[in-house]
Image 1 (spheres, rainbow, N blue to C red):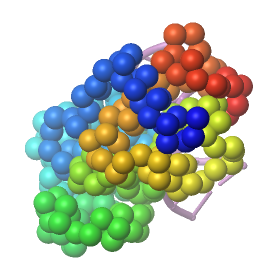
Image 2: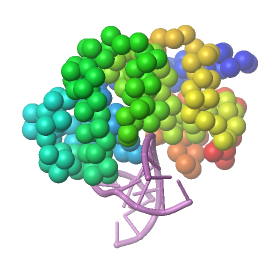
Image 3: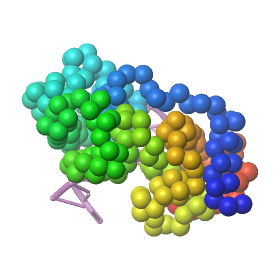
Image 4: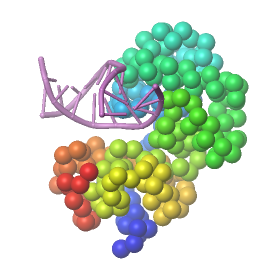
Length: 220
DNA sequence: TTCCAGGTCA
DNA sequence: TGACCCGGAA
């Protein structure tokens, strides 16, 4: 089976088992941008706690965060972990948003996607995964988000051999699937589900939607 | 109570 | 290659 068919079969098998994951989360695009920063190395449940605290403080706008003392911001996002690092990074991000786009996500959506990704990567604290999460989930651009789950699943199923760079793994998906933001969104969400429930550091293949495809639970 | 999971930067 | 950190699982 070629890569295109393999990726399609993976998608169908996961969708058949789990159904749509209902990401395109509620909340504003700006909330998604903040969430993308806060979820670095962090479970989403903890990110939600931090987002709720920001919301309660009426601080879910670029301008509000830009104007806030960094100590206050760190305290608000404490549940998301790495709060000092993330407060600094969030500050960098909103500073750039206010400077370059008047703090307006709609203006960011109107920018050329390739240029936007480069600008995001230029913000200290935004790496490739965070940039692509923002591109896909906040701005609606078809970028395939690669994370630790994606990497583990791809290695164990022989899609890539370690070490593989972020961009190379991303290309495996983007070059073999139609460029569709809604599908990329769903695909990533399904991979995360598989990663959490089965494709953990110590694989639990029993009952995995991808169990029927060739795999090696040892491979990392 | 310890262990673990997990992006980015210097 | 280590530093940054929480909350939930073991």
